[in-house]
Length: 254
Picture 1: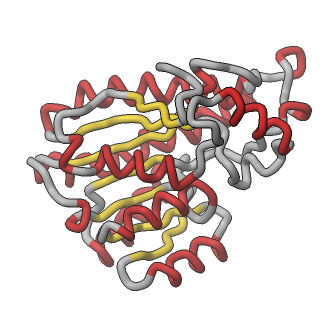
Picture 2: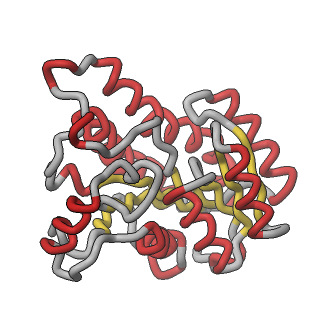
């Protein structure tokens, strides 16, 4: 079963700003109805929804809470219909600042658990809230957001990278279980993006070094990532599931 993007209702978690906002704009550009999830970025999310118009709306929920996710799904369904596509982009507060990162001798399990609770726990809560609808219609598209730091931990962000590694494993096990229901589950992994709130603390010199080492000669943008996400929700990816697509200009060959 295939459906054009313009026929879909899409939930993007953590979409008030940065990469999530770029993904929301990309789906809206292709005609989808877009639910912009946010936790704290209410002003930014509502401004984005206003910018995009009647086919977009802002919905508050902490994705680590199954109760809040359930309530959000009810609100989205009442306005746009039940979501057919989930893009799980939400990220626990994090800054890509190598100088300020937590080193192993100062890190606690709580640091890793906090990242994993949003990455994997948030994905689980959203999947569970969508599964009945998607299974009933024999169609669903789940896209998680990962990182190329798993292949190339150029800066050892232990907590962030461990959580994304767990999310990749969950993406693949979910693909196995949900495939017979017509639901695909894939991951899009970027490198350092120029620029989001999370990467704003990264010095310009680091961006320049990455660009010089990348075959395409530039740093990936949120818009580059967003267009790759569209692929997994499009009819062209109907036979693709359990995959991790690295979008970083060729810096890492996965």
